[in-house]
Length: 339
Image (cartoon, rainbow, N blue to C red; front, side, top):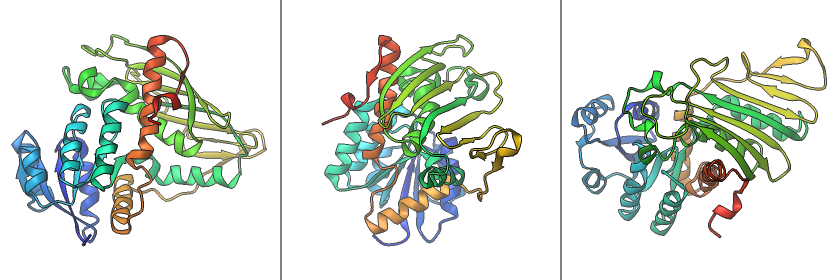
């Protein structure tokens, strides 16, 4: 593949802007050749931001006619699968925003289609590319806090304060679910990378009623059991009018603790306030980092860190959470994955 790698964006809403800003910082690696959206003005706006890419309102035409190497899918969740399948059929590499699809079945279809086409599929799980999370992984792998025993994680938002009434994120058929698949997915994928694979799940969910018109969960709490014996509780909240942290990650090890309350801190065997040391790391743009990684993979043939095949396990944990919440029983994650 020759540089710059040509990218066609399908979906020109808010999240596309973050990706396009990242690509503008990687001009030797990528060139955005097309912007597509059913709202022509949105496509025109994004095309202007990258210096005059071609504008389309039909994604099949954009994928077939733009001369792109990569299709970047930044659309509502229920549209990831149909666009992804066309991209695979046209022998294009795929970058898709999280979650990969509306459910595990659709995600499996996308991975299989991409593999059959001999092309790469990468999922935009930005939290693995954040410098601070890479620092945390480095600490865990060094054994500095010993064996991971227990993790407490949450993502807290108030959807009605972010999106207007009738937005697609309020609808299960468009988003695939509520807070778990839309924001909990971040921490599920991150914990898989930091701690290991999830073996089983027990979950409870609620619809609070404070997000008008929402027909899926805006409160979820899930107990995750990992294959190595570690345990985590994960809160996924779209019903948090206020939150003391926004996103919480506390990792309790046999020899120390990492937490992000009021910053990022590490404690070894000591006790009391003086035991905590601030983590030192350089902040980065995770969108730029993930695209830079994807570009390296496209040029080298290496599989992405957040490949579609890897992300099936993230989607399977999401599926297990929903199944457990409905059945009120634990669900085995591996039983949901293709053999």
